[in-house]
Length: 317
Ligand code: GLU
Image (cartoon, rainbow, N blue to C red; front, side):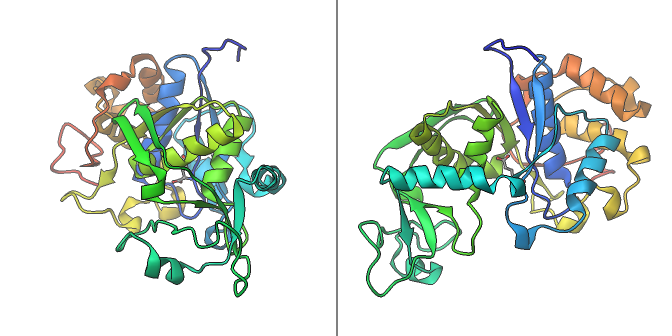
């Protein structure tokens, strides 16, 4: 590693709530190659903050799967479950600066008032923003957002803009059930690890403006972002978890199947590995990819995943 300002620091940040799946394999490979192709570092972080959803043994299973596939990461794996103190300090800074407040609203109360008719993300209508109403007890901690449009240039998806007051409103940084929220942890950790390149699945594209907002509040640098297309089932539908899982725990023998999976992931990312790699080891495939990866070929649209791009119709996973 060097101190060079241009040294890329990328990362892969799986949540150990289930075995590695095709989508996370694509995110692992995409983030790894985007970093390594320019001689950068690649870090690994276990996003195990959401303890009720964390499955025992899965973090180790993910690491073992990545190792078996030939991935090498730099430094120690960072576990979010061991960094509560850092998140607490960040949350306290927000409170001290008058930027965060305790909120006593339940999801159903918000749903009743929120301008979003349905769907996952409800726009918080600001009920507790100017002080907790007397009948309420503090549940979550929210950060205040202001009426501005946040834009960034995504390396894959292009320019993306969002007005936080319209998309989510004041958002949660510590959840009602205890843990610090994903947005806060990600921003604190990426800054602490010097991450300057975030490559991950397109399901997180719309989460990025909230994270950029927090980076600005804390005066952290904003990394470069690249969001990779989502993996669908053969007919464009959502993949089931079972079909999707690729770890040893899910019954797959990666010493045999690993090369085919990596080649499939390379094709999925728009790369063109030579046919001579069809029988190569995972390590040799990754070595080829580190030399030849072309980020400009990554497609934007969701697509099915094929293990062997020469016969795509016959071997969908
Ligand atoms: N832990 C998240 C996931 O597994 C990824 C978070 C990120 O890359 O920022 O979907």
